[in-house]
Amino acid sequence: MTVAVGAVRRRHDARSVSARAFALLDAFGADGAVHLTLTELAERAKLPLPTAHRLADECVRWGGLERRRDGSYQLGLKLWKLGLRYPDARELRQVSVPVLQDLYELTHESVQLAVLDGLRAIYLQRIAGRRAVPERTHLGRRVPLHCTGAGLVLLAYGGESLLSEVLAERPERYLPVTMTTLRELRPRLGAIRSAGLAQTRDEYVLGAASTAAPIRDADGDVVAAVSLLAPSGEELDPRYPIAVRLAADTISRGLGWRR
Image (cartoon, rainbow, N blue to C red; front, side, top):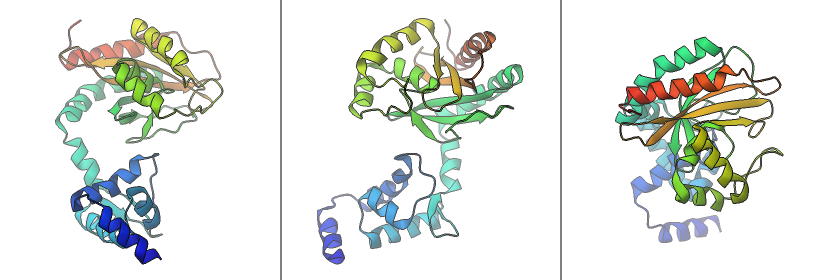
């Protein structure tokens, strides 16, 4: 029966070999999974197990995947190195790193740089703060747009089509105060655009509060967001929003933006 199912899948799969290999790599972006078994890879990429095994081995030889001791797979370092060569991301990181370091030295909180990646935000740069803050973020991880500081900034400036696509995915209500509906999100996104600032508290992770501001390119388009993460169980330092907004404006000027 397994062979028959595999044969049916092969017969109806019109994807090229490269498209199937890319599907294996995309499997890691579905929910932020870091390690996947061969069976999980095959299921997520919609491939028969033998095909997934062959393509995974080829990806390992190329460096796009790495095989762990327990037999599972993880993304390879080669992909990260290639990503760092992406011109826009490289320029953004070069301009932003000194500014993020200054923001960290001023606040000693976790600071992050995020860009839009499909219907999620992905962190390109991160400096961990001195205080322990519950979080689900790490470098290269994709996080929701509707309930994270950086994500809300990117969503606010992403236009109606992006908002519609996010809502069509039925965004998850992670915590009681997480906003997931058009009625909740539309006025909030308008307020973010008016203030040039997004703030969250206990919306994605309990115990974490974030403050984020938009980064613009030379044309004035919002291309990224800088965010600061702090414990939510205490009063937020009133200087943090000012510092985050200043950091975002400084990075924007480095990219050629003029108010």
